[in-house]
Length: 112
Length: 112
Image 1 (cartoon, chains in turn orange, green):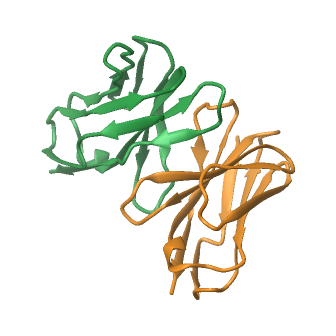
Image 2: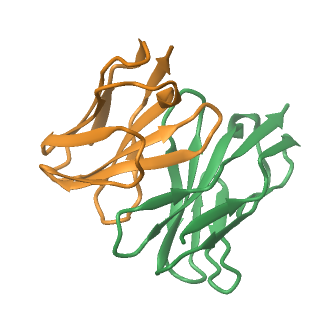
């Protein structure tokens, strides 16, 4: 069975500080990977997707970047956090191009 | 562009009531449609998907039929339970892309 793990569970950071969030998928070879952002009470906004190691596509610009250093790992980062980065960050994977997605437990980010 | 419209932001029902959440979409290609459910503090979970006209998806007593003519994928359940209280998202992915668009979500509250 596939499992998806996100870290950290929650972060409280200062405006202007750097950020790195991680996601690992076990039990699935060569998954499509995704990052989403969800404002409190809001919908899910797709940020990035990746279909293979080293290749990441940006869907929306939010002063964030993503990388896929290994087949089972997806990293979301920024050099300087903004207040608007607060929210819930979700990693997801799928088997198929545009198929159903399986979400991780999420990371709650608060920027002060 | 590709979009999903959920007309109900919040729905409050009593147990055993009938549920309908409306979902209409606009897609530039051939979409696959999804319903996801999200419980507080968790990532969304897939309920079901449909990718062909008149295809019906169902799970846990919920069902929806893909209607290409009316560009709709309305979620229905004959008899809701308190445990169904959650946020429900309609989503679409467009063929030949890895982009997924979520609706704004419908918060369902079922009172005992």
